Length: 319
Image (cartoon, rainbow, N blue to C red; front, top):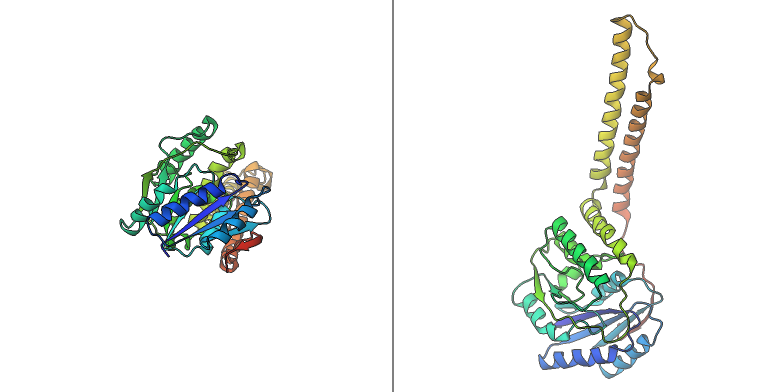
């Protein structure tokens, strides 16, 4: 199979039929073998019913419905797991992403050899409340990761099949999939300017909570990607530094006490009466706790199976 289209959606009943017809027209024109996997992320409108109707008319249309809203990352993760195409393309369901971009994205993956091609909506029709945070996140992500993309949040992306099979997307990490892929060794990441259309139906799902979660998600990715397989390197290192600092302070206090008693013949205050003693004791304890945290993290990383916790309500044309 040439292409798997993975399309997450939430309450997009108005656009699904038009989007499907557009995709079918493009695929037929370019003679692609394909599948379209709609992931209904707990819609409360008629989206699921429409997907069922569309799937009866075209066997390439498949669907999966969550029992509740798990978020775009969970939807993409399930779609990636089910995909069978050589190239996996993601796009939004609100008609703001154009299916006319599919042939060129496919070519860049299959012919030009890119691992990932990310769309860049150079001219956007989103409200300013969305464009300004997006530009800020893109700038911060470029600086922190070294990946030279202008639009990490663009829903229109293309991947080699092995890329999506090698990553686990969770939380709100969908906007940082190129970062996850790069840390899995897929470093040939390209970009294509794509057409962005004004929303035709419904309302944007972008809210204030995404403005808050964005930086936290990026920091989480950087931490987990670096230390998830070796937590002792992080916690153990901090623990050793803290323990050594506490030990050095303790040695200093004991040496000072001995010097005062046997050299200066001066008793002075007892060690336990000095505030520095309690600081040293606290640092020793923190060092031990951090070291144990690293040890427990190592055990958890060995026994934890990274699997999806999304509860699926219904499958359509999916065996």
